[in-house]
Length: 89
Image (tube, rainbow, N blue to C red; front, side, top):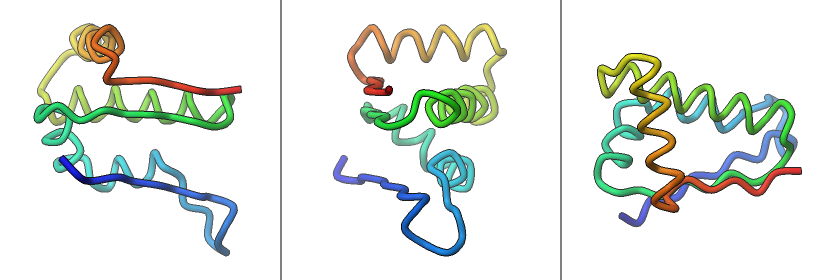
């Protein structure tokens, strides 16, 4: 898995946020997760990291055909495995 995604919302005229990119590529993003991808979120805690986490949960629910409870458990498993890390401030 050699795919990396970045989103620098302040570096262009139109604001593009990482959660928009995740949502746009939800099918592929889900495939990455199922293939063992790691997610690292760095930046502002509010609202960025919360918005990204909510988008992750939406993608897990929609693409993984999971309930809200199952999506939360899936994300917790990613955290427990060290595959989902946040460095937020």
